[in-house]
Length: 162
Length: 307
Image (tube, rainbow over all chains, first blue to last red; front, top):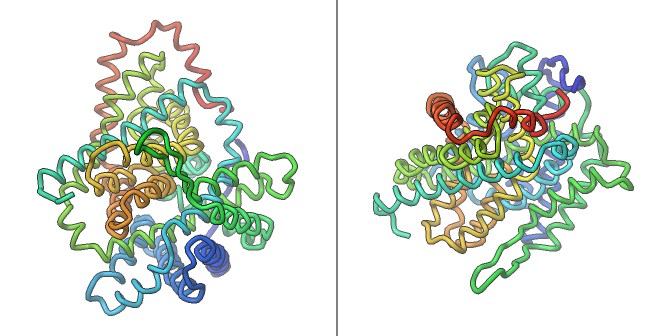
């Protein structure tokens, strides 16, 4: 595990350049998948991915540049919610283009990277016993059902129609 | 994937948020990850294959079917490409780049979910109580998984393994509280690694089965998709969207918001409720149903190797 301990690196303009290129590659692959799987128009999807990439870029940049200790996930969520909020001037344009990207197209590309990335942990995974695998499945299932059942009860109690 | 946490500790940095940041920075800024055309080209091919196959519905019994989405093929194919010997161009280096890039790409996924949330913000305010209280439903794991872990002979590892779903923020909390070499941390590392490997596939099957079998509110399934990592959220969302196609935007909004809550408010629930409650339960149950101390030897096999 010695390779795991790397020295931290300062963010530079070089880093931002790397982020932009990576987001561009991701966007192009997603747009192609989005076209193959859902036949959404390529040009509109590219603009949609451009919007999402820009939100991401601003979010990761804010996380590193602002003195607050807030994760980029929060910044990205807040920006995304704000620019799509009904009544905000950007709302209609953003919704039009972003709706051309299926969530599942993004996820398919994302998980291809995840699949390759987790390959590294395969040996560690094999070394773990069957008991730990059972417990993990129980933990995931009970968390999922716990959340679903509580949500269902509250939704029914507050009178949300099915 | 526990390495972010390890270096996090080595920098004496206890902030959970920095896990993502340092890992992303290290992987992305050191080299020029966009240059690895073999990695990105392979991903493109995997995505095209996955989308061409499309969703497959497997009927189990009358009216019950499990849908397998393209997102699962692309993930499993990615893993197979890494492991397969003949594929020499996807190696450890590519996996490290993919892992770093993935931390940036989560942003795109979150941004898409946030846009859906913004669009449905009035609904999210209306459903506020359900969204917030379902976070407490996560505690079910302590009631169900902890006793089983104790029965199977786990000792203090069980505290780390069963207090939460064990993604990055929770791992950081446990390591911070108990120390890197504690049994509790070993437990959550095991949970983290197995969850990373099978969690995405497992929760997708779970969502697929339960949306057809359980008569719960569609929004309840949406909120439950958000319990784990971004990839688990996405994998659980796939079958949920397929089951309730008319509610697409709202389901995306609730899942996204619920996932956001898991990463923000959820972490405080883990610190202030889940971990103390797990400890209380453990020290109550262990003397009663735990195996004798001989069992602790077998625990080492279940801990994370290579420490």
